[in-house]
Image 1 (cartoon, rainbow, N blue to C red):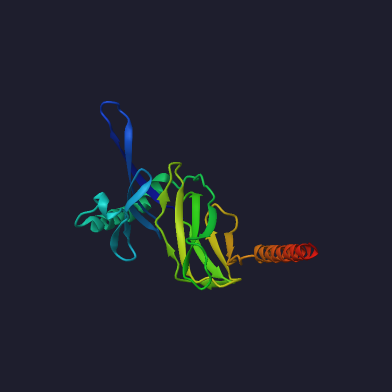
Image 2: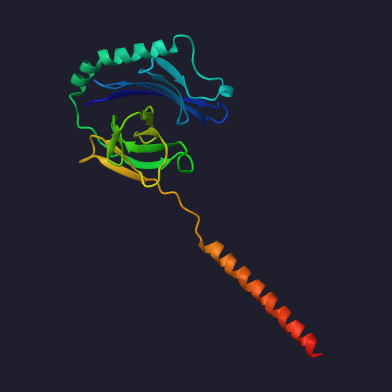
Length: 234
């Protein structure tokens, strides 16, 4: 599967010192199954088109003068349709040259501290891969799960990509979750597992404190006994 991504980099310069202070990027890409349209700055995403929900998603906080205008999403749809219309021509022109491929690296972790029976989010972070796309799937105790969400592809400075898959779950002691990643650069799917293992406070400190207190009281009682005996002798 070929994915052609077109990126434009803009740099804002300080005229007096001629130094780059910010770097904008724009990504518009498509394949026979995938499509992406995203704006960003300094490696952070500012806006992307959610083609499943049919809306533009602003990822900036409200105080930062968020990017966007009327028709912004419709413009993204038009750009992707143009990409798809030119895809066959691009494939023919490039003659499908052998691409340099980078294998993904996968990690899995919980968003918050794990507390039994309290809803949490598992995150599967897939990084350092090229080209897109990747496929991410989840299991719980070897049973396939649905309902996970997948982020946009986020480009890195080295030309590879990151993506996040998140799964809402409720921890139960002993449950085992797995995140499986499929990518063209892998000989076989890459799977990471995560087990619900909530540490139970140890009894050692409590026992130690109890024994120490008992010995202390015993020492006080013994001292009092000998003090009384000594007074009786006098």
